[in-house]
Amino acid sequence: MGSGRLVGQFLTVARGATHWMPLCLMFLAALYALPSRGQSASVPGYVFQDCPTCPSMVVVPSGQFVMGEERVSRMRDDSLRPHGPERRINIPQAFAVARFEVSEAEFSDFVTDSGHRMESDCELSDEEVADGVGRAPGALPAVCVSWRDATAYVEWLAYSTGLPYRLLTEAEWEYVARAGSREEWPWGATTQDICRYANVLDESAMRVLSDHPVSRVPDAAANCSDGAATRSPKGRYVANSFGVYDMVGNVWEWVADCSVLPYPDRPTDGSAVLLEADQCTHRAIRGGSWRSRLERQRVTFRGRDPEDTRSDIFGFRVARSLSD
Image (tube, rainbow, N blue to C red; front, side, top):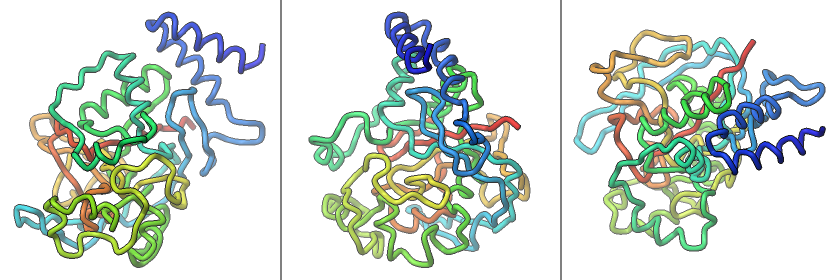
């Protein structure tokens, strides 16, 4: 029997008996994860999908890079947020990362199947609501997601597929965002081309944010138009050198780490900074958003918030460890 017919039969079963969904997803994960002839699932650049509704993944290579930057950012409360200190990080093994941020449709599948409860007063901004007229439902990155929600999603995906899905670590996130670049920005030394590569605070966003506090911040926006006033659907901009989209801008992305300022000396192997639950007051979140000033879009800027925080500009993407 062909794999297409098997997929069709299992999807029919899954729709008719939702309690079989994890078993069906595990079967489909095994089927979809098989590399094509002549390919290896550990080769950098290899794109795969573990099941029909799983995120599209790409393999990124092992390597080394300098994490952080000798820079500070002034925050709204007038405190100074360090981007460093710089430290050399070794990523010892290739791993897979989602090519796109988790979408509304993918997150909705999780909520429906798991019964996960989203208890929050988080709502889309007036600018988002107005901009959303006519947009395809489910195509945008999921938002109003806390770190706990993101963690619940990857735990569900790992259980459903039988594969080691997880959040990126903070070091892995910056490694993927840089994509081998040593320049100030992943695409070059300036923000000149930023609107080709990212959905950031730009001229189109500033037009709808005229009453927002960010509109009064000097040099907050890029002097270009990326074509999106608020969130943009996946894959709209140029991918980075690793084949990953929207690492800069669109929505902030939760990562696994407890956020410690400044960076601790260890770990330097790409693993997450972890503390006891009563000591981990904030989780790391990276990448900026369509509404964040340019300084926040830098790949070295370190966002941090309590793990139960939900915001209309907070989302995430997934990673997956690869077997040897």
